[in-house]
Image 1 (cartoon, helix red, strand yellow):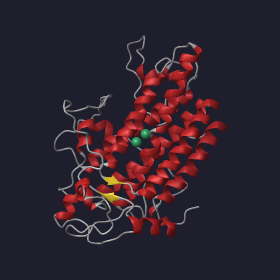
Image 2 (cartoon, helix red, strand yellow):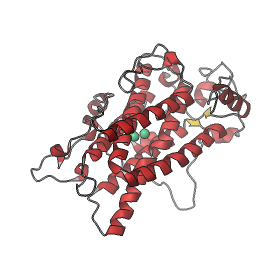
Image 3 (cartoon, rainbow, N blue to C red):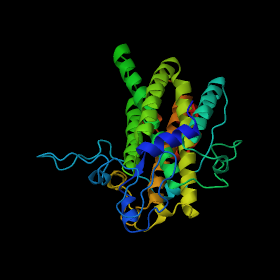
Image 4 (cartoon, rainbow, N blue to C red):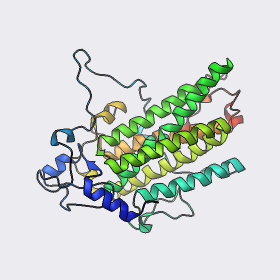
Length: 354
Ligand SMILES: [Fe+2]
Ligand SMILES: [Fe+2]
């Protein structure tokens, strides 16, 4: 098992994570960090051009993964355009929890508790930074806020695994449909789009913080374990797996709600600094209006995405996995609108949508 001490040693000697594009202007303007080294997964730049723990050339700080310049292609837009949210839809999102009803729910919930413990541990959260454990996905008050670095590590780790289940489920349903010569009824596209959307979250945060080798190693290990677990789990019980993903998305909504709250309370000054810029990839993907491109705005969009995933997966878990169509892409006989997953934290019951 990894100890906190091991994390500190590994991270401080070889440059584990750095804040890049969005933070560099603050450093050079003198508004940035003067603390030198902080322990954990993120190391900090000092004033001026000295980068105490960087092994990455200066030119790479602008973009960790710049778009490839080619002779003929000007731009490659996202394959799945984001459907957008109104401001009110985003503000209405709240952390919520679907109560455990079946033994399958119980199993999914317990596994999620272990994952959350791992996430808190990896983020280096102290007890005073944690919420009331009796209400882990809805309580958002803490004695002490997290730092920007802790949040970025949390976002990166969360998003690096969040894109796995949709891809696994979509892939298995795709193969099942071809193998059994059966219709899929619209599930595959929603699942793959969810996975794509999660990867866009990851790309956004990776433009802001470059994981170091230690964190990359953890992401690699986590993906290996998580992909195979999801694969086996989905083969055994897609119903329980969708419930598990619903609980995972509850955690995501909770995480982003806490971060937004701490921004509102003024605990994350680097993200409220007027000079702070969100990554261009994010502004383009979410079609964020000019003047509405703060870190809080970005987190509102991402949280709304997570709320959609939460509603979709809890709903899919409630359906007949073999026969039922995907209600979120269906056209109803009564001309009613398709259900809106973001506004239904506990998901729709089968009778409501089928
Ligand atoms: Fe996400
Ligand atoms: Fe999500």
